[in-house]
Length: 525
Image: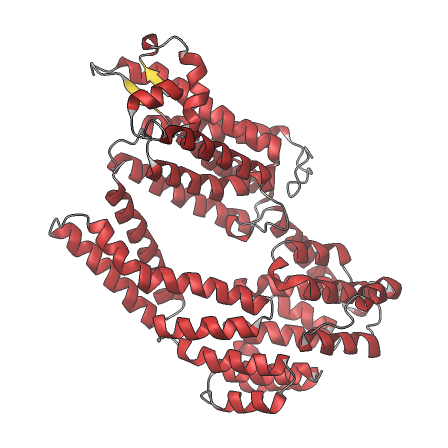
């Protein structure tokens, strides 16, 4: 498999997709310039037939995009954990790597949040004053200063004055803090009304506020153990205590709050004090109008649907450890380590270890090899690509389907694709035997299973989130087909066979399942 061609694809797709997202959606013109430059480097390498254009493009992509993206993810996680000291250090590095699109304002912003967390509010105000007057980060620091003092009415008034109710959905951070403020103030009707205008990126936080402030303990628990798990144990405890208070369960709330005594986080201490001094009254649905009760019920049902059908990028290890996906990855890696002694690209070594040989008459145990060949790989690049696909797709299928059914689909696609290879590829005119290895059939089976499962569920329930997921997997499938047709040494026949087998298995199992069956928890455990 030609590594440089794969790099051309990866860099091109990455920068092309990011150019669309940052330019058309986010108006982040600094990132637009970066991605245009990388695409120009890649295009020039291909146009002038330079040696290894994919590698050249990767050298440009790694420091300009790869490193900032990695640091940005670490920064987001540190911020979610309220570890503002670490976030400050990371923001300084990120401001050097990408000094555009407002990232130079992040170090004083995180410095201010760190000051607030340590109780130095005056120093935090001075840090906020160093930010531009119109900066959203400056406004967010002021909001945090009000939050730490429990001044939620002033928080709501500030956001209404500086952002405006009509423009709130366009400012995700302001929307989240405003929703939190009206929830803390007990304005349940306004929270329900606001939910109808929620931007997609604010959806997880709004879901938590709705669950906690309307006393839905089970939903709050699922959210904090799933998509919101990065917020940490202290936040989890506070929100569960809030949900218990609003559910009319003060003893359960007090037991949780007692475990938070001595927390070193100023935000936690401030909220803990409020929950004890002015505990919430139980949520009363009758206080809402009939239309708002119906809207709230529809909203909660939609939240359960989102948790039942999680997007691949929203899977949380704490929610559901991908044990089987990890085990399959370890098995493939172990087989690759066995290859190294004789060479992972040495055909004789691969045949000796169990590679599939076509025509099958050349070996004595051809039918055993339809399984063993699925765990062998031709070189490290082949292994890395298949394991990346296994990790992305396997975790999704395991989360929505369960371990046993995911394993059945993976093995059926692996075995079926290799059987197709035995029956079809042996009919060619080549005098040389064909050696087949790789987990591609099983991985493509998982892709087919994802498309088939979502298609059946969308046909049943017509949920917009399923339509979006189906479109995303359809695009991934189209890219895979184009890649197969344009890449030498890739067997599109085996890929297509694995894809179709996985799709058929998924459709069959989905149709056999009762429409009311839960899909967010594996029924086989």
